[in-house]
Length: 417
Image (cartoon, rainbow, N blue to C red):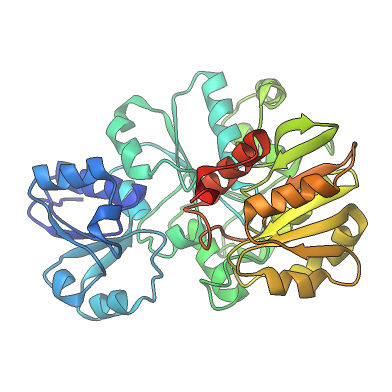
């Protein structure tokens, strides 16, 4: 992609927006940056970089006036593709892509991309670790936290790029082309963003859109009908003592001719992912589990299936259009009491009432303290929100870190203001 003297407007100054701006600037594009928030909320080192390079910045909203001279708009994943300003830009013939698509056009190495409703982070991390154990150099990036555009800086020094890919990122692809595409599973999620499950699935299956007969598709068997005509998928398979995530990794390893022995060593040494069923500590015989990354109902189901009763569950946050009633049975079987937080409190209460005790709490620290009061020795206090975090926290990482701080110290600065 030749960006020289092209006017490229970056929407959003989160980590992906920052990385996109730096990548465009490096390739001699004319960078403009627009953010919906006030200037004081912009990451200070990035704001200083913008000033140092005389880059035009718009704050407080994305306006047509700011965008109208652009050749291309690079949109952050958090901005809906049907946002009015993007609809206007598209009608004017301005190219609209996401940060992942931008980075992919500068990527000369094979991409292993992983999508699905649950298990993406664990699977991408394990694939990365298996590649490294085999002696390959791998860049782990995407929705897992590090933007793909940052990886381009070191692309000549790696053998593979391992990408965690969300439906939001796939909405804005054009030429994105993974050599190996893994679709783990599909369940209800992001219905606050996608109008229905069909639209959500349509975004997910775009991961296969630009693949050729020389590329590979890895699927859960339940998803056999979603490939294009002529595409022959590998199915996630393996001995029953492997988890579904591990089976997906083994299938990738088979394609790359990496032995199962290498995978087994990685699986054995794997310590898990922070904020995903993370054991925090045991206090007075009560285990504390941080599952803040569980932002879907299906992730909550998985967490409860891995628990022994009695569980005191803290859940809630920003609603994603989820149907919580689909896990009523496992909640009633495993959970002794639910402590609900956030804007979705009433919906969760109605979904589970009648089979489990429920208490609505003011905030996370209130929920933790009430759970501690009620939990006896041998119990588990589980934070598994099944919701987005944005009504109370910056992201699920902050929510998980705050939970751990409250558990260990009894307080947190967020709740002492």
